[in-house]
Image (tube, rainbow, N blue to C red; front, top):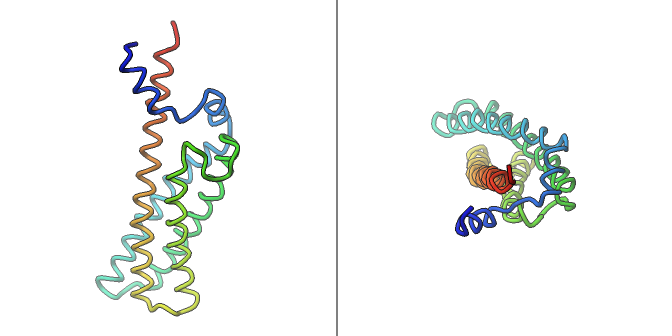
Length: 167
């Protein structure tokens, strides 16, 4: 391998060999792999329902139920993700490899929780609730992109590590 390729491999070093082993062996990796696409599917359905309500004024109940379900799935993936991070990195949150993703996840959780607060207290009307949901969803999309980028980096690291192993 050339010197330049080695530097590129080091730039995407997310896992030590031991962390990678723990990641590959824990059931929590599978749980995250199932919950992430499920959450995205719930998000797409909910986004359509929220936009339908905002455009037509119809379907408030369906949109509300969908946002609550999306929030519950988010909480579930956050808790299981924290367990995954503890198993792999020894910290429930803010491990070096996922620090900024976790920071942004806090914003996502805050906005989803703000939606629940608005819904439960009635301090924000239906349109305001849906605007909060859209803000939460915009933050979720950014956070999901962060995690997809990390998944890509992990794959590149795995390829680089495989290329370095003598045959």
